[in-house]
Amino acid sequence: IYIDESIAPLLPSGYAHGRRTGVDLTIPLQSTLYSGVEREAMNAAASWWTNGTLYVNDPDMAIPENISNGFSKFSGSYGRLNTTSDFLSGGELLIGDNTPFIAEDRISPFLNQNFVALPQQGIAARPASMTNFYHKLEHSPSPIYLTETNGDVILGLSNWDMNNTATPTVTFSDLGLNPSTTYTITELYSSTLLGTFAGSYSSTLLPGESIILKISTTTS
Image 1: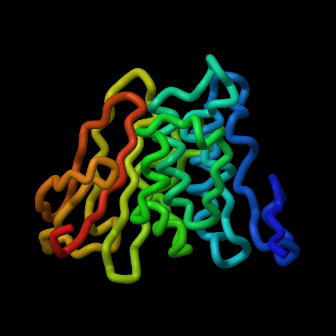
Image 2 (image 1 turned 90 degrees about the horizontal axis):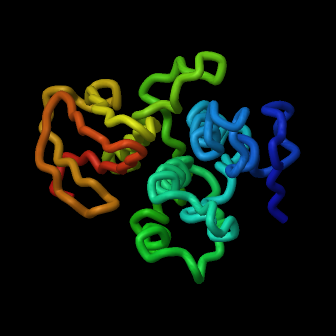
């Protein structure tokens, strides 16, 4: 038996195996303050430390397209933002969409063993910095990262601004990496080798764009 608590309080723990980190993925906060996707991503980022200590984190169901909503389906941007959060939550990976009808570009990461293996490691991505919570009306943190057992870093970068581009810069020392070492960076969704970098990395993201990077000392 596996017990997964839905919208459970943080404490007491020990009465279930898993805990959902927030409310329903499709429910926004006060209509326009936060989409359900961003709200859940923020909750998952803030709860990274509970994964494997108090519970197995459940970032709610993965909804690449939200087929059931018909004409109100998720845009490609929201679907990808949600997918990044799901793969890097470190806990459960449950698809809550109508899988036979999901567009190929939305479902393909879930059929890729390299992506599916990320949550199977049981390591939740942590925010490089997080001082932004609901009362400040700031976006969910970007970047979020996890360190694999072989030392590679998996880095999620998301632009939660749906109207403007963003250029996040990541300092390698903030990710626990040696700032003087040269690293190979690969974007995993597109399987694109971006090159070698030392010290830091920056990327210009389109409105609503989300990428997952692998930072490695060897060629990916």
